[in-house]
Image (cartoon, rainbow, N blue to C red; front, side, top):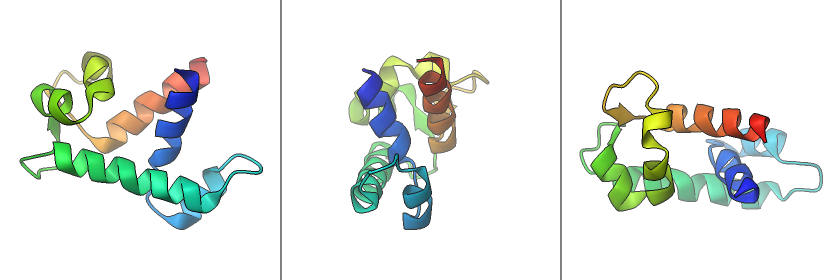
Length: 97
């Protein structure tokens, strides 16, 4: 689980430059960028309304691990979560472990 959280956290890099700076020593920046692109694509695919927000149902259908933690991520209890909220959650979880 810890490894998965680290991978997901690294996937949030939106540019190659960020991925390079966020990569652990000896990490492959190209791999980090590919993972970031894959996560962004999964978020985009799950976001069927294309509004940058995932409902719990959308998360359940397209990002089941995110759906499992939906209520923890949705700290504002808005009924939806965004990619930056997911990143913040993963950063907090990574720091706690």
